[in-house]
Image (tube, rainbow, N blue to C red; front, side, top):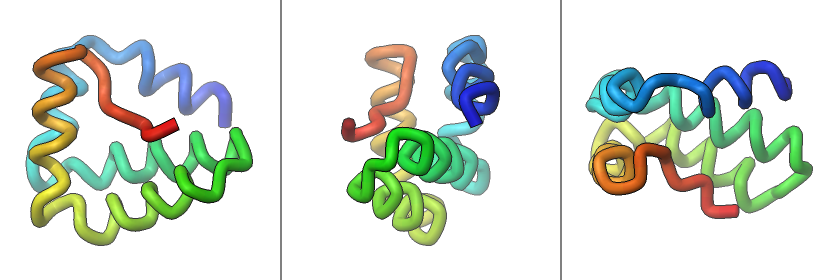
Length: 77
């Protein structure tokens, strides 16, 4: 799991930006879910599940904004 988290963290920001677009934003949900499982953080696990389920509708805007502003997605923890 640590390899997957490191792989997502090491992506170029343009790829992170593409992953934040509607339709691909579930990838950031998977990232949050895996990171939550790795850290044993229930809030992050719940955020990952919510992001996977509803990220395509509105939450992709949050990811797009944070990637543009900070060159990374928010993880909440």
